[in-house]
Image 1 (cartoon, rainbow, N blue to C red):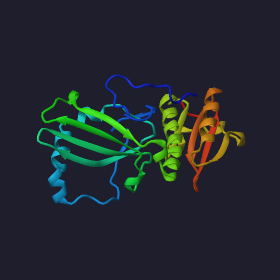
Image 2 (image 1 turned 60 degrees about the vertical axis):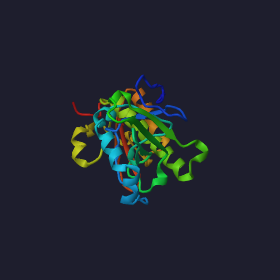
Image 3 (image 1 turned 90 degrees about the horizontal axis):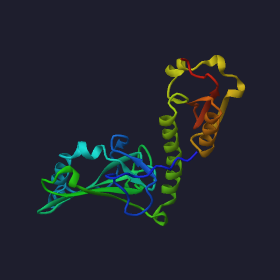
Image 4 (image 1 turned 180 degrees about the horizontal axis):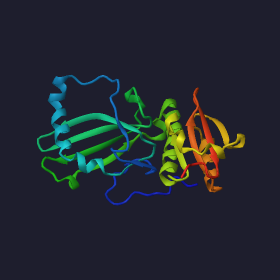
Length: 231
């Protein structure tokens, strides 16, 4: 199954370096706070940090709906910098391949917004600046690999809502028809790896319905059967 056959359209925000492979918008991902050495209030004032953020906030509804593309999966963001000049403002956000980053060096890209004061939303310049592959740390690479699997699962959930579901707690088990489950319908995997994606795809292609359930100790229990979900 080709997970990466989509292409940017006119008006999307795309990388200046790297492929447009993964896409998201700000409403899809988490706004987080991370541990890093913040600028002093005096320095923020000198570069116009707060003024830049205030200017961008006038356009937040517009930019929140923009599709943003990146060479790597993105699941969270935080403010990286804000600057102003006499005529323009500049804001950048760090982008992370994990849901709950702790440190700035987990960022694998930035998305930048730049415009003159009083500019219309459609006249804001925006682009993604991603790390090159040879700039990624071993930790970055590990998180990107794991994030790619999460991205593919999100894709499957969106594409096959009637055939594939992810159950987070036991209260949702009432949606499963356990009469259709036998020992051959249950499969244990280590947490989110490529084998899970391959297995889910193969079962869906056979016409089966699939449910993923957390099983503790970083294990995943997958139920797969015809008529798995109650109607």
